[in-house]
Length: 375
Ligand SMILES: Cc1cc2nc3c(=O)[nH]c(=O)nc-3n(C[C@H](O)[C@H](O)[C@H](O)COP(=O)(O)OP(=O)(O)OC[C@H]3O[C@@H](n4cnc5c(N)ncnc54)[C@H](O)[C@@H]3O)c2cc1C
Image (tube, rainbow, N blue to C red; front, side):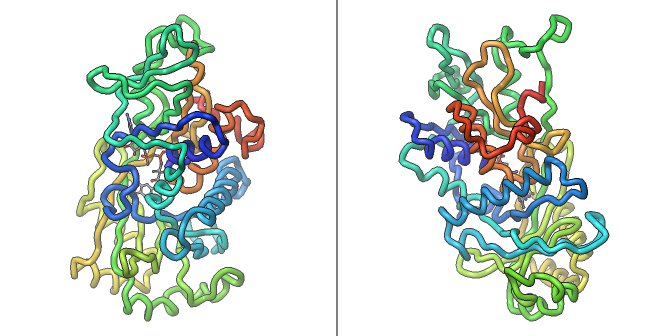
């Protein structure tokens, strides 16, 4: 998401250059195979009592992604504004209605962002190392595992989530932090973390449709603008539930997510599935029996992936603050909110690269997400 959003933002700026996306996987966009990417995600603002930078950024981000979806995606197929009811509980003493919430298929958004005449996508291209090109101004070489040159570019954006850390730590030894003192030396780790997790999804069938109007009594008090009490909306709380998602000719529901630390390779597990179902049964108790029936009928599937997180839950975006690293940028740390952050962060990093003064972010949010805080 972050890579394709950045590429699109750069291409849209009319740079007289090609934007090359190097993607390690065999496909960046295959929406037909849910195993490759998160099948569907929830786009919803974070609400903090003190309206902190995370809340402000997520509001701007939801608006940016919504604009992208409106311009590039098919409503009802690739995304759907649905509103979200945040149930009272851990996140706040009162239920809250989020009229801006939507479900979005990340693979469709990525495909739409990459479908630009100035963007070239090269899949199966895993970058193992970055090297500044001596004597060529600020150009960079991206090398593969055998040391072969995958690409040469004036500017490089590392938008490869947690894997950005390995490339940054593998930079030549002389590229120490700009504010470095001899005592600190070269960083051996950056405060980026990988948190694996999985979602569950199953058929949104006639039994669910019949149950929906009786599912949550408090729904009748909400959704005055964008949705009626009877049209399916997302439900948020401890985890989330997205109903009535158009999926390969029929409909599914999707719910998540687990947070699994210390799991280097994300995978679907029976334990993860059980934990998602249990959480969902607590989020919407009236659906407990129906869920149990779908699970025992083998109708519920799962998808596993990983998030790249930072300590302050904000993305890490902007120039890499190392000596002689002109032209090297970072756009990572999207956490559990890639749908809320990628579009906005892609536009911001594109503004940084082109030197334009039109970042969509106010100065204090630019500072809050500045990649330099990782060093
Ligand atoms: C279970 C689960 C549920 C989630 N639900 C939601 C949700 O409802 N809403 C939401 O907004 N977000 C959700 N997220 C979070 C969302 O998936 C992430 O925020 C988002 O994927 C981050 O995008 P990204 O582009 O930074 O990283 P990624 O999506 O991880 O993409 C990184 C890409 O870089 C490539 N790559 C890595 N290393 C290299 C290399 N060396 N060379 C070339 N390519 C490389 C990878 O192949 C990959 O394609 C969820 C995540 C999980 C795990």
